Each structure stands twice: as C-alpha cells, then as structure tokens.
Length: 303
Ligand SMILES: Cc1cc2nc3c(=O)[nH]c(=O)nc-3n(C[C@H](O)[C@H](O)[C@H](O)COP(=O)(O)O)c2cc1C
Image (cartoon, rainbow, N blue to C red; front, top):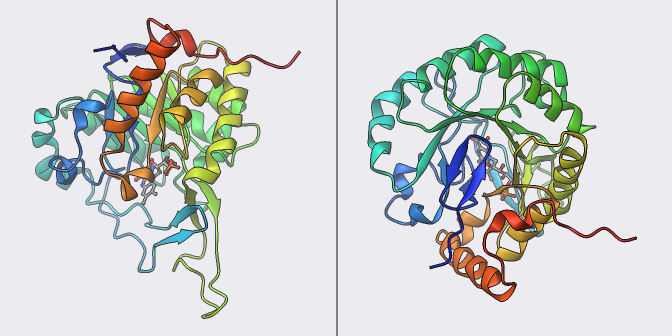
C-alpha cells in the first residue's frame, strides 16, 4: 500500500489527514463509526479550565453549501475531561491531540499543564475563542503570542496554534505564534458568519453570530495558507476548511500545507477519510510520486 506518511514539524504522521476539533465529538463516541486509523491525528473537542455550558438551541444550522455553528464551545472542563475521557484515548489507533481553550491567558496555561500529563500527543491551542473583551484572541498577534507563550511554558508536548481566517494579515499572527513557540499552525477555524430566517425573522443561531464552515470557506483558508507559506517560510501548516475530497487535500498541500484537517464533512459522511485515503494513494501512483511531501508548496504560479 502506498504510504501517505508526512512530517509535521517535529512529529511524524501516518497520514496527512487530521480530524478537526469539535467535529468528531469527544473522539471516543465516534470510535465505532469512524476508522481513526485513516488519520494522522484526531483532535479532541476544545476543553476549558472550567465547565462551559455552551449556548442554547438553535446552535447549528445548514446555510447554502456550508453550515453555521454557535455551540459556544460547550465542554465539561479539563478535570472532568481527564476523569471521563482521557484514559480511554490510549486505545486509539492514531495520535490524539488535546485542544485547549480559555477566556484568558492563564486559563490556557492551566489546561495545557493538565494536558501535559494526559495521553495526548500534542496540544492544539484554539485561539478563536473570545477573550474577556469579547474579541477572539486569533485576531490579534500580540494576544495570540501571549497565549502560545503561556502554553509553551506549561507543556513540553508539541503545540499547534489554531488561527482564524478572519485575521488580517493572518501571516502576522502566524509569525507571532511561531516566535512564541508554536510548532505548527492550523489554518484554520471557522469564518465568522450569521444568517436570518426570512420567514420567522429569527437568526438561525441563538447567539446571532457563529462559525461558518464547509466547502465555501476553502478558498479563504487556501488563501491564508498561501500567505503564511510565503511570509513565514519554514513554519509547518495544517490546512483546514471545506475539505471533502482528495483533490481538496492536494490543493492545500500545493498551497504549502503539510497536513489537512477535515471538519464539517464528518457530519454528512463520517467515514470520509476512507475514501480520501484511497483517492490520495491513487493520485500518488498516477502522478508517479514517491511521497506526499513532494507536493508541499509545489503549486505552479502563472508567469
Ligand atoms: C459543530 C462544530 C464544532 C466545532 N468545535 C470546535 C472546537 O471545539 N474547537 C476548535 O478548535 N474548532 C472547532 N470547530 C472548527 C473545526 O475544527 C474546523 O476548524 C472548521 O469547521 C473548518 O473546517 P471545515 O470547513 O472542514 O468544517 C468546530 C466546527 C464545527 C462545525
């Protein structure tokens, strides 16, 4: 079988496919449905220092070709997560990454220090969460840098910083988190969006604004990957947003990503990674490529 193994900074992954945080539940509850051996890593739902109740319904809605979610990062808090979930993750057939979230810099360090002793191979830092001023950390290079520096001080595990496609210029945030100690960036989270039902006049989400994900955000995230690869050379990137086929994975690799997250597509096609894996292997054979890393950043610009 053709190997899809890749290097993502300091880590070796058996596949470039990453199951994106929040789209495979706690990971455990999807273990019988999804073949996690098809992934290089699966990312647990983001977890905070204390339990977060999340927003009331409605908090998920289909919108044209994509979807909106305003879950409010509902999670049981790090202590309950460690008690109920963490110990079972050792049985997973691939790496599991923890995901830290908090409303302030110190809160991220609390979660990271607890994840440091959990059976997770890396710590993802979810910077798209609002800080105490109500704005996502990910929009601000200095705040993002402060969060990643605090996480760096709290764990020896590899760190991935999850950026927002809403940040401009996003490469400034990427450079700041790399300087603060991130081993790679995930580009990225959902795009902020909203929708209103013309019949009920109600917003489709109780929180009005939420995260837009799925196929339509892929060109936005690919543009962000191109900018980071150009402006922060050498920083490993996980492309994420709107992936539902092997062609989309290849597109992200050509743009400069080394690995690729799959998110919303899990809701319609839980076993999507099985098909994408076969199609990626077919692509390598057809193009006579020995390994996927030959594709990283290899897009051909127009003259
Ligand atoms: C219902 C839902 C819940 C999510 N929860 C999280 C989360 O807890 N932490 C996080 O970092 N990203 C979360 N995300 C963002 C995804 O991990 C992913 O970055 C985003 O959806 C873009 O990828 P996609 O277009 O393939 O869905 C969530 C996305 C959805 C749709």
